[in-house]
Length: 350
Ligand code: ATP
Image 1: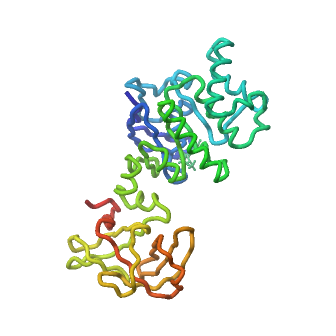
Image 2: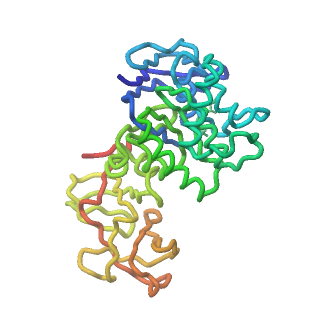
Image 3: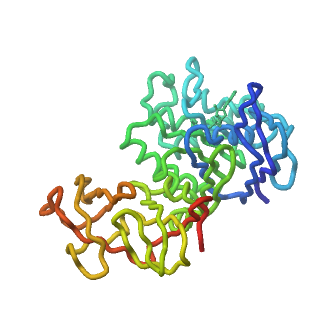
C-alpha cells in the first residue's frame, strides 16, 4: 500500500525535461518532503501525482493501482498550492465546503464537516469572511482545510509556507506537524527550506535535474549524504568540501594536512562546519589557520578561513569574543565527522 512513481518522465512541449525517469516509492501515512534546487522537478512531480499534468513516459501507482491516466477527481488527492488559490468571491465557509459540494454531500453533513476541520485548524471564527479579509496564515489554513475536508488519502502541498513571514512560517510548521500526527494521512510536501524538510519529513526525496539523488530519513540525509551535491545542499552553512590528495595516509589540500584512513590518490574530503573542533593554535594534531572573517549568529559564531584550496567555515558555540580577524586558531577534525567523496563522480565513498 503506497505511492509509486515508476520510471516517470515528463517532457514539456518546448522540450524541457522536468522529470527524467523518476523512481520513487513510499508508504501511505508517510510525510514525504520533496527537496531540491529551483527547477529540479518538485512541482512537476506533485502535479503529476495530483493529475494536473500527465507524464510523457512511465506510470504512477497508488496502492497498486495504475492511476497514470485517471482524472484528478478520482485520485483521492487534496492539493494545497503556494498561492492558496482560494475563490475570492466565496466566503471561507464556501471555500472549504467546495470539494464537498462538487461531491454532492448533503448540507447538514457539509455544516458539520466544515465546522470540524475549521475547529481543528482554528479558523472557526472566520468562516463568514472573504479570503481578502484574511491574514496570510489564516488564508493558508483555509487552503489546508479545503484540501483535507473531504478526507483525501493523500494531501499534496506545494510550498504552502513560502508566502508567510518567518515567525508565522515556524508556527505553521509546528501546526502542520501536529495535523499530520493527528490525521495519519499521507503528505507530500514541497519545500526549498531544508529546516522544514528536516523537521516535517518521515523521508526526504532530494531531486536534482528531474532525478532522485537520495531518498532517506532526514538524519541519514544529513549524516550520510549519498554524494557531494546532497552534502552541500543539506546543512547551513553548507558542508565544507575540499578537493585534495592522500599520500601515505595524509590528506593534503592548500595549507590543510590531516591524517585519514584512505588509500593514496585524489579524494574530496567533507566536514560540516558545526563538527570542526576549535582548539588553541599549534595544538597537536590540529590544523592552524588564520581567521579571515568572523560572523556572529547568536548564540553561535561563524569563523571563515582561506585554505589555499577554497574557503573553509567553522560554526562554533564557543565564545569567540577574544578571536580577532587575522589571528591563528587551531582546528581539529574528529575522525567520525569526516566524509569522503569520489574526486571525479562526487559519490560518497564508504
Ligand atoms: P521551483 O523550486 O523553482 O518551484 P521545481 O523544482 O518545482 O522548481 P518544476 O516547476 O517542476 O521545478 O520545473 C522543472 C523544470 O520544468 C524547470 O526547468 C521548469 O522551467 C520546467 N517547466 C515547468 N513547467 C513547465 C511548462 N509548463 N512548460 C515548460 N517547462 C516547464
